[in-house]
Length: 230
Image (cartoon, rainbow, N blue to C red; front, side, top):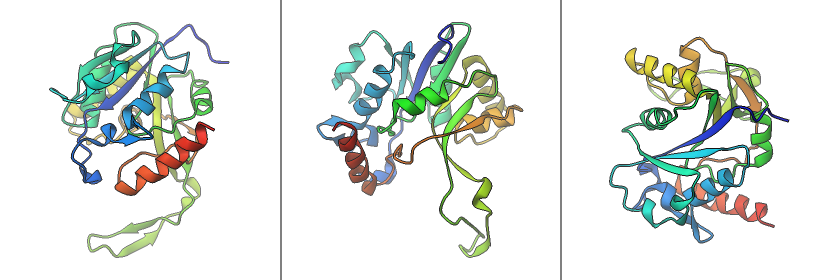
């Protein structure tokens, strides 16, 4: 079992516009089985007892968030998101004041997260932190500028990063600020921690913990969610 002496705060960056979904609203507000993707995601976090608090980083003047009943839940607070995912995460982290607090950063559009994967992730307690990920199974090609194959990567040591990503909140906050100051593009929390000299652990998750990014992902997420409710 995980030590519960530390505080665990989930940070959910939910300020993106989801342009690849080709929809009239951000992807986190599209519905699956009568609930928005964000509601599915947040409900998983609310139902997981070790999480003490959930911070949602939403767009300024977001017209959808106030329609969702969960915003009145005592564990949930809202902050203004940034222009990028990393900026939204940093804004959420700045809202954390407690010492001995760990941040569990999870994509708003990953509604199929399993509690058993959270159990494994929270077993990590050293400063390197950890992320959920799955080993690469497809053959991976590296392309050149002309979309021609340069070479085939050795996939035996390659993993596909997922979320949540789990780090001490103060260390992650410092790592993100340092990455911004140095002009690095940060695509996930682990990359900021790597730049700061840490070596996060890879915790094997489930492949159904998909991120809804393209229109075809909606049907797949609906299928996985229907299996979880049976």
